[in-house]
Length: 302
Image 1: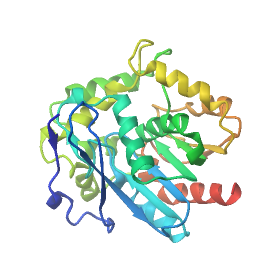
Image 2: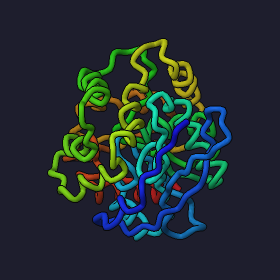
Image 3: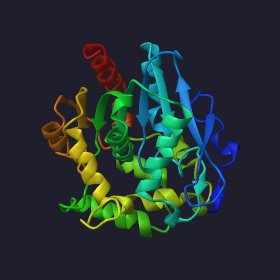
């Protein structure tokens, strides 16, 4: 596995990003003896129960910059890792290096073997929700509660919406993959040019974008997809998850609209709220509201 590492200078002077980088290593899972470096933010009281913020595609922990600050101000410990291939984490350079199974295993190694997290409140959006839900299925005892936002866990048994199929094709074939522009398309409010540049910072050249281009096509759209069986097993396990679950989907995301209904039907202790006036990247459109949703849920359901 050939691995790239974005130079540190690419992350200099990002707006609203004062957080010290932290790193740990995970195995590459390709049979080799090397290691992959995973970046994460860890802010707030170190002995407090962790709030885990998992980002999706094609963003990185920068997506949570205002939410980290807001939750820390309310007394919480907040962890926000970068998926392998994104942010300041190492980037396997071939799209074939990226599989659903590996991404779940990489985060499991980082969060549970590396950081030994427990009593976790998960906030998962987009791929952060998909990977997070697989972690819940594998290690439910580590989670205290879940907040699921603009995400899903497809098995390939139903046809995905046309906008998502178009996104899969776009990610594979667009000549220049502009992560900042993708974020701009997925919000209801304009994204400042400096913020768009921050989303492109991890990808100084095309070779660094293998994960960003690969992940959309790893979402199962066919019943025989390599990840489909594991997804189905995860869904079956959720009926036994007796911890509080809150769906916090936004009202302005055409791709995941209505996706909360299955979570509400399957998780025994699930309820809903809606984040108004926000698109797919609700962290950009409604950061203060997201902070309040998470913090209030923790306070209401200790």
